[in-house]
Image 1 (tube, rainbow, N blue to C red):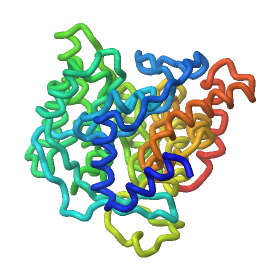
Image 2 (cartoon, helix red, strand yellow; image 1 turned 135 degrees about the horizontal axis):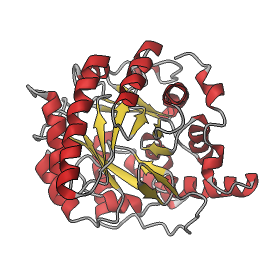
Image 3 (cartoon, helix red, strand yellow; image 1 turned 30 degrees about the horizontal axis):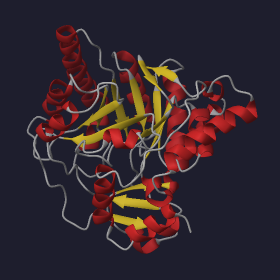
Image 4 (cartoon, one colour; image 1 turned 120 degrees about the vertical axis):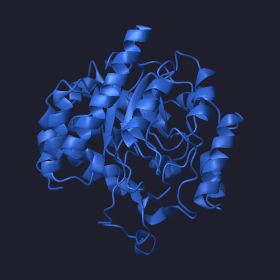
Length: 360
């Protein structure tokens, strides 16, 4: 049994939320060693004006309060996304609110944007190197009277420290939040957010990309609406996708009854199908970050084949441990060797049609 296996067994003795806190503490304290990866130019790429050392990122949800973004990058991630962070601190939903479905390598959460608020995250990000590729995932407070205003505040608050923004309208755990994915609401949100970005760009002389994170639980018509709005505004990219409310194909039926969003291995097929369908709708130019069920170099590569430029993960690390990002990066280099690729982008969109034919 490896040290990583022992660490995972130890963490699994605790409830999921306590284990999460312990993992954050371990990263803060340097208990989890940094990974020394050899730079591979075949994995390096420029997306939305940003240069990524490799296409694997830590998704939002793990480091909600910007406590360890640089420690995450030292594990082998090419980038890390903090948040979701809201203007005011909020405690989120009552505990317990995270559930492991071990047989399925899945997680259900109904956290509800629990975080310490803008001010706390900003202080921590101001202490980070500007060279670290850290994105800021922004959201709205549950009790907000102006949810669009909360997103605008996020842009203004973090503009000088964020390398990119993600407007998260896809969490199932804040009542009514996914309603912002509807055509008219989405157009209003993006208009306000991008106007705020443009104001800050004019002030600072620096353009910060804005991505939109969407849910996997969309109809074909819903995808049409999002694609149409995304292409009509100056959006820098999409993140596909967040957690699902579906419980199809799960082995752990007892935990499957818990309310909240499902993530991990069972999300791979659904999220990859939605990714491919969205790629067909928006064309080749708009960047897409693929998320959902990535637990290996092959699943990461399949996201890219389906149409992703970059790939994020989180829940699968619960089961694979902190060595997962470095293992995936090494695996992608090995794939480039095997297939004689000059760049990992050479496989991008090679299986979009295959995935897009599936039903959602």
